[in-house]
Image 1 (spheres, helix red, strand yellow):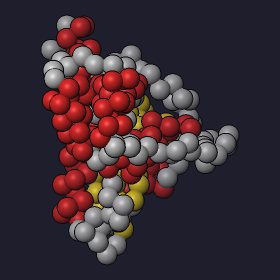
Image 2: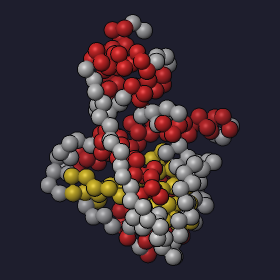
Image 3: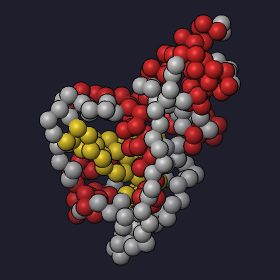
Image 4: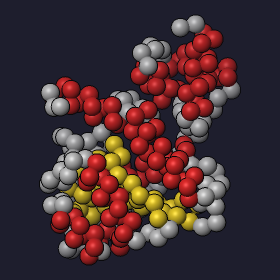
Length: 249
């Protein structure tokens, strides 16, 4: 590919990422389109174009050791399951939507870090968490024996949520109190969303927010954004590749 075409492509991918893609990410996106190129050349092209990526800085996590006696930390930071639908984790964050806060709940399959469910609401309650879990359960074909991990938020320890996990035949696991490292993959997902994608002043209304959040989580993050955990392969594509290698249809 000619240099001018490469410059144009690099600029297109950088713009598509809303200024979040660095040279490593852009190399992964180009290779996903069968364009072989090294990071040094991409860095040179980005420099020529004046492109500077925005990335989140290091996050200082608090340390804690207190588990809930009734819901122990079964996961215990074992973040690399052997297959899809073995371990899911969930969390809730907040987003400004015009004149008030709305709340986003998401469910992540740890196998390739794929987002499998999400929901938004004006209230960060158990109904929101249940709705995100329900989307994940239905979209993944109602899997059995999933381990579901979260922090000790009241939404996840509520009777309604625990009853839903029981109905889905899922085992519950909870982080130790105040220890974000125990649910680090979810922390990273929300940090990436807010640093890379979320408009600086939030969204103008809920409709815009839901449309954009859906695109980021279910399209851009799952299918386009290279993920370091998968050696640069987007989560959904990494999962499809693992199925083809193992012969699973």
